[in-house]
Length: 623
Image 1 (cartoon, rainbow, N blue to C red):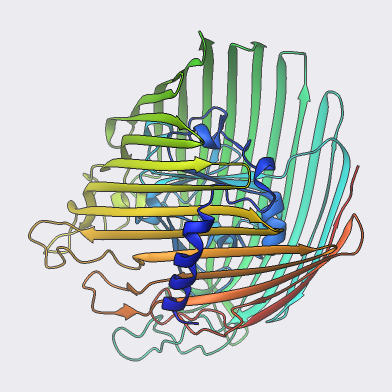
Image 2: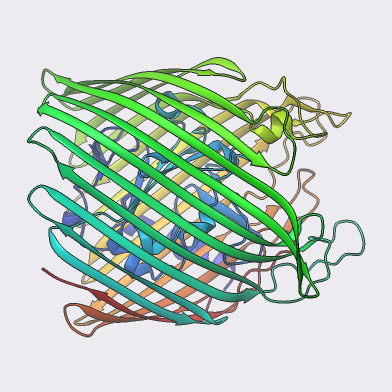
């Protein structure tokens, strides 16, 4: 299936479909009350948000039959990925054209990601442990600090519904895919607990088609073998109401993975990775008009690389980073629809590595204040934040958003915000390739949106521009400096329609990410590995106990390098899904992915899976 065919399908679907950002799979009346907390750090309904927000809930996750978080997110508005060879392999996420280390990722409110390279390892977060995903497009540094230039993605792990509930899923598929997950939850009058465990294993594909000979040969290795992946995970959440006004909750996620890839004795060809997220929260709400909360968190990103050959395994490198965080926030409501929130948070990063860094820890303290107000058809949101970092000193960011409801479900929004990203430890202290005098990267963004919400259909349109200054890059003498600039313009259209038993969800994105570094040979070139166009169309229909679904997703061409001399062709893929409800609790699911066996790459020399099949037996208890 060509990309032009996919584009035509999306173009035909969008005017009539024109759907909501939360892309529901149930009839719209059950979805319009979705609440997001990431955009403002307080609960706000999707349709009242002044910045673009998308929510993917557990119902959508189950029905998508996604075997990874990246598969779940592909083709969503504003999102693009570059993957190095299939399941479990290094993946870069681009949100509105920004770099992977310019997107903030939270798990249950705790910041994750490597402090050395700045990237979150989304490929190791198990999708079966996820309750919902919130995607905020556009800068949120005025609430969260560093990294939130392109936006924020928050992943909420499974919590507990009312009463005792159990779940089980068993999956088998192509490339010897074996997947199992199980868990339970129970919520009583005062306390609740949820526990989930999961396992995934696949023989994978040959990740890289490169060779050890010649310049520009991909992974510079001759290893034409399957590169497998294995992941074992556990997640526990619980809470207790100590009184009518006071509650305590905690959570823990542990994901251990083993990953094979094509490499050398210098970088290894196997990796043992561990992602851990711990957190606890105490909340006090003595009245409807006042709430105070305090939160502690820790995230560990551990990566041990080895070179395996001839039955021997040699350690290549160790990069283990730890992030400890603490936050306090107070929310005060006054008058009709008026609220002020203020808070402070602290973060400490630490590194343990076989590579010697001149500095292996740093602290950051941030304070913020936010105002939200409603005045009839008008709504306003404003926030400002100051971060004091041990390495780069003070940095202040702000945002301002406005919304106007025309009636008949129409709503206009406009927002502006600044963002920044602190240099990583690799930028500052990696031996031979760093500069301890680097300053933060800075951004300015504008967004204009229009939406309409109805009972069985809704749509949103957003146009934006982001300018990023002091980007970290290399000068003519190959020294790392704040020299580069970028200008990113784009538009996003999403839609939902429920008609005659059909649920249609459509999303299309146009991004124009340009290098705007004055005097550079790459001036006005497209930023590497970002596609300018992408889209996704989901169609679902129930026939009694049988549910059929089709997902078409695609991307335009991209360039693999800054010089725009290595062009990767655009592509489109089609997945077909079938689900049969055996009874109220048991269901059988089957999926054929990339049914036309499309051959494509998102990183030069690195393969992507062809046609794949999987079969899942799923159980969800009902109260």
